[in-house]
Length: 252
Image (cartoon, rainbow, N blue to C red; front, side):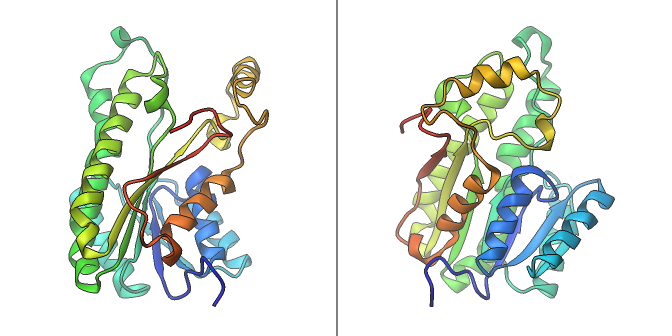
């Protein structure tokens, strides 16, 4: 059997109808996993993504859920289990808009939204999936974090604080779940342009890429293949770790 195969594994990637989530799901699918594509609102876009996956020969189905809502997560997980089988791999990728603002221009509701996506959502997903993973003595929880936590990017306090919470949660859970054969790891991308960045000022893009030691932009599948490694059996003795996918911009 080739390395990094995910044959017969079921992978859920939250927020996977577009952007990094979509490419991450595609990488997992190319490695043989059955993919649960999650979306919240844009059904037309999600159906287009599903058609792309099927055209590539990837086994995938769509599942709608707001992943900050416990009832919707429970319903989605049940539907995935009934349709594809037990969930072996969960990639926490879903994200809201990420505006940069001075702290005076944020309100607590915005901070709470960041915490809901990056701390509450991983907690809710883990709580729902862990009984089955513990019973099978195998599971992969993979959080998409960010270089911004290590860099302390400003003015970006709400997002950076929530990513710090997600990082701390992942580290603690890695120790808690290790005896059960369940790994918890993180992939921390830099700025990898996707659809959501199409209107970003070119000046900002040029300024960022000049700070990347490799001197180029990352590609969405750079993130996807790092996730695929963590999802694989070859990473079964790796937990509580972060792979920074940013061309050397940070050194952990």
